[in-house]
Length: 99
Image (tube, rainbow, N blue to C red; front, top):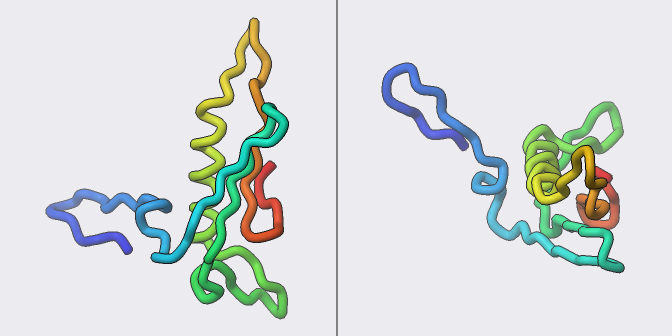
């Protein structure tokens, strides 16, 4: 949870720092061309919201997945003379959330 700040400063939220205790990140490199980060131990009450009978990722879990994907992609340099170096994937349990 964000903490109060002095004055008009805005409290920043770091999805990794503010993730619940017990969440773990399993990193696997497959075939030298794929990095897969699997997030395990996500508490149900924190990670999912009920939307009319459908369990959807909560905004907090989505922010965590997006942050992990951003970290992976920061190492995947591309440009005019180089293509992506690898494929990246973020999973929650058995489900791929970002490819």
